[in-house]
Amino acid sequence: MSAGSLPGGTWTLGDLNVTRFGYGAMQLAGPWVMGPPADHDGAIAVLREAVALGITHIDTSAAYGPNVTNELIREALHPYPESLHIVTKVGAFRDAQGGWPPARDAESIRRQVHTNLETLGLDVLDLVNLRMGNAEGRQPESVAEAFGTLVELQRQGLIRHLGISNATEEQIAEARSIGTIVCVQNLYNLAVRHDDALIDELAEDGIAFVPFFPLGGFTPLQSDALSAVAARLNSTPLSVALAWLLQRSPNILLIPGTSSVEHLRENVAGAALSLSADDVAELDKIGG
Image (cartoon, rainbow, N blue to C red; front, side, top):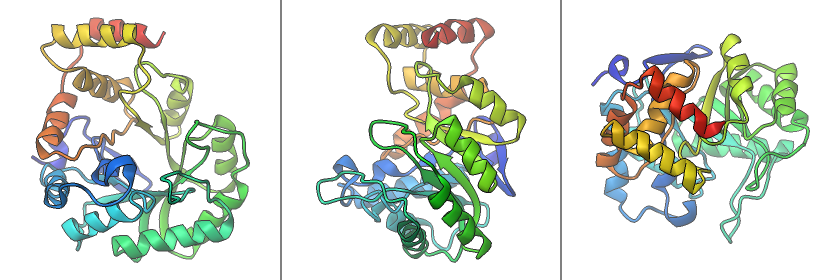
């Protein structure tokens, strides 16, 4: 399978041409995203299959493991194909209890960027997202110090492009006043649609939107509605949710994660599901 035949086609992040259907490596780490995977060879196989399927967008972070997913990516795929683009994020570290304490002072940001470079085996990072907020969600806070530090590292040639994650509209605007962003990575799915207007605004400006938790936050009633549509289409709820996201807006990029080669193939096939206007109208009611 080629990149052009993947569901959704491609999108350009700055000067990086990526498949809209990407892969999120978070699930390759151990339980609670800590420690090594239970099946090391299986994790390597998933990453190699992602590239074999034509995926050119892999999302990771040195915080996953910590360092586990980056090191697996390096082991499986380095030296990287020229067409492959690895996106990472900074803004938090892992404590011994498995927490995600914020780490957004200038020195912490620099350290995290260099850790990502070292563990991935790269001289330059294609794209770095600044992770804001905390495990509870988005929080009001200035991005100036952290994002300004990333812009400085970008000017030094260590980063090609920048994005922002788990961010409010005010934080996105503040980041854009400091530097150029090519993507926003926020919680969004059929049921959680607070960013509907934002997605459309970003699309007009050529900025990608990358939803995380594409099948999270559903009430039982909403889940039943999604399952009903999936049953009618002889598909699965996840496939329908991924296909809906791809059809929602051309600037939406997907990074579903899995630790199974079979599940990865199912995700790719499922996202290619074609939803009719009636299907979309019915699904849109879930978020309304």
